[in-house]
Length: 198
Image (tube, rainbow, N blue to C red):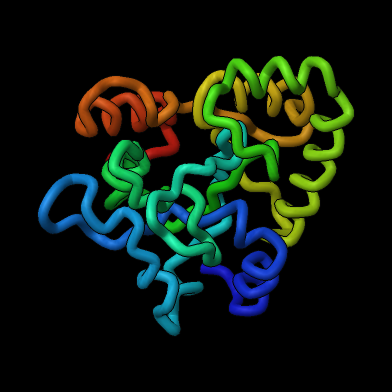
């Protein structure tokens, strides 16, 4: 659980680039309702969130389908080709449900991770600036250091190279991997070892 003040401050400063691992449940198909943002309109939403874990992707997505701009839309796409639903399936009924989720590189909506890596290699200051901002983001989330969980190899490399001496850093496969949602959940929970409930 986090305070209402913390929730509102994070929404104000990072709501356009971050979110929480909480979603509305599917009904018709496994991907249905992934982009339903109504879950964040609940008056007690902050009571369903936690700051023990922070899941970290590489860079902010630009593929949100038909959704209008709104807070916490990242990782909650209604785009037909999205794989956010695999995250929902992987985290449901685990201690990771309701965790904070963000990207290490903000304001760079490039789908091709190879292009992101090339850009960062040519512009190391962008990494250092984003690391500073990420630390500020984490300090707003909690006075205690959460466990960082990189989503995929690219974000893991950045976290390990810059924050390994300050945080416990774990890694899970990226949700774009071409496997079933059931297999993805299995891999995620296996990757997190002692940190899962199942």
